[in-house]
View 1 (cartoon, rainbow, N blue to C red):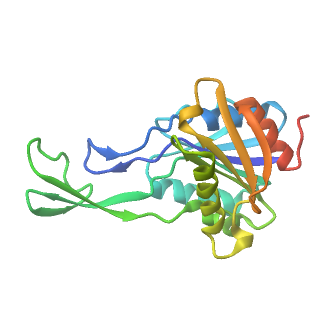
View 2: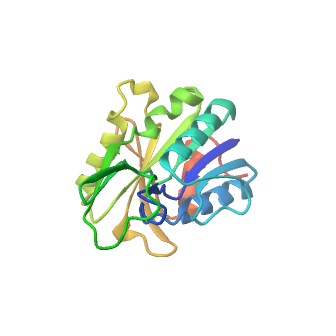
Length: 225
């Protein structure tokens, strides 16, 4: 099986030394990519420059949302993947303008904003890449998305997952499954998660990343070799 997995988190520059980013380490995608490769699958990982990287997969790196979107679209359209696992922490917003002491500049046009000045950062909303994966790759490709919450109740987690499924107006272009995990429960090798199907049925559970890898392959129709 040919598998594409995304990981890490995007960085959106404000100037040459500052950026809006998140805390994604890339450990989950790196583990899963190597796990899939170990059981005989052909794996490509699109991963952020600063993240932990898989050792046994073909690697493509990105830094910004735009770079991730470009790489992901190209791979989806040209890679003929059987399974896409979208685990990257994608920036919901990208800075496009900064206001320094009342003066407006495009992001990236100022080498370094001086310390001590008043700074306003204007941001634009980014499109959800997960909504385009099946459009780019074809509806026969299985797509598994992730929804990370923080200190959320079970009910709140399910609401967050349902929003991922409902975000696309074309139901057939929604992910096939969504992995729900919560930051408060992830500690080292312990990584509890629940995988939901489009009807919000519980498709699988796992307590660690190895269990998650097995569950993903089973749901994709490929058990371990």
